[in-house]
Image 1: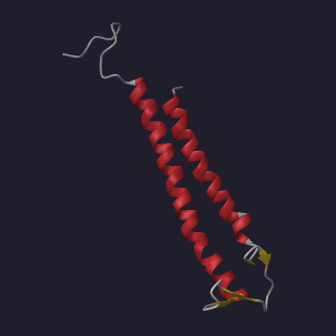
Image 2: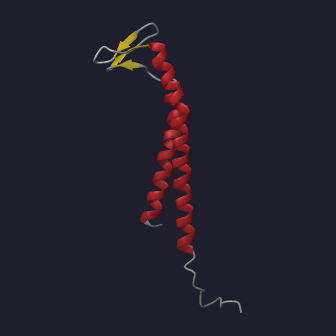
Amino acid sequence: MTRRWWAHVALAAVGVIVVVWVLTVGANPTISCREVVMHPGDTCANAQGTRVQTYQERYDAAQQARPVIGGVGALVAAFGAGLAVAEVRRAGSSGRTRPDRPAAA
């Protein structure tokens, strides 16, 4: 296999890893506010102090992002797999006939 094929397989693997992450770790995110873990009932103010979010708002935002991230991961995996398959087909078919198989008339 060529380096190009391995690059396509690596791209597909990254997409699969993202989907697995969404289904496992992303299913139960750790909500934090500037590196401090939040718990239900906590609030988080932005650095300027102009906006405050509750734990539930941040949790809901993380849950709403899951399908988007999973969808992008699935698209990347499918794109990488498609490129890998196309590379195998392209490498296996140069468009020329082999000497032991003459072209049909």
